Length: 407
Image (cartoon, rainbow, N blue to C red; front, side, top):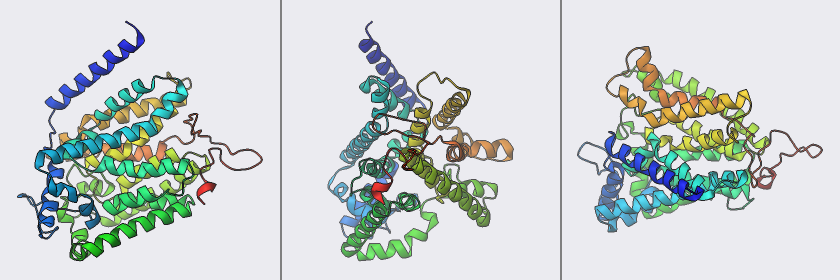
């Protein structure tokens, strides 16, 4: 069997195994979230109150009005075409992310590019957060694609860097932390572009939907009951961890202390990443931090960890790793990936009492904390995007050059 045929057989085999596993394993979400989008936006388009609509079990639209405006085409679609449109947009975002994150590694190491992307896609599909994002019909991968469009822009010194982050933040507040990344790392122009884009999109939405905007910023944004119970096992944030210690009375002071500690570690590590010319690690660390500090991080939100897994895998290449440190990183990466695939947290959905319950119910939180603290910086190099931990001798500027172009 020649190499191409063997690769085709391998990919087809993996796809078949994944398809059977996804079909058989529990966790089918029935496109619940895209149903919320479809119902709320359709109700709004017919003259109803966007934030008054809810499903029979009480779930309503939780995003800003700009998000609803961007979803208005749903109002013209029936249910099944809406699902198809969501799947196609998600597939497009995944294709872009694989091209940006995986294709340079394939070219640098002389791999078959289609084969590397196909294997990466299979590995991606195995992750619990990705499966939930697709099954819920969520927008997470689309927002990840928008934010990483700015990574692409930064690496090329484009003046449009910041537009993707701004649009993503106007759709959902969590990606706004990437404005903080641009500020902490001294990308003033990109930070201004991101802020201006987010504010501009919000103002435009407010001009067309003043009542919905007023309701969101004065009521819906602060109503935590709209998104669910903080202690529920799906909430894999620091606040979820704290809430599971005492579901009736979560210690907000403990949570704030943990948030401050995480933000300090994040700021130190991303500044180091930029000095090393490694925006890929910096963006990955910011996505991990967003998941930790957000009050609510459902399992499907953890697709923001995917770039960190890619950075970790890239830092161990070529395989097999030659030195002991790299082998430890490789083992840690495999362990984290397996945990994120396993759905382990759902074992504790009906209770997380006792030390083992606490450890298992917060399994994804531990993976996020480990990535924040230990993600390698400046070790993954490609032909287009070299990552180095040393400055360029006499000049004192990180090789990779993406920093000063945006100052």
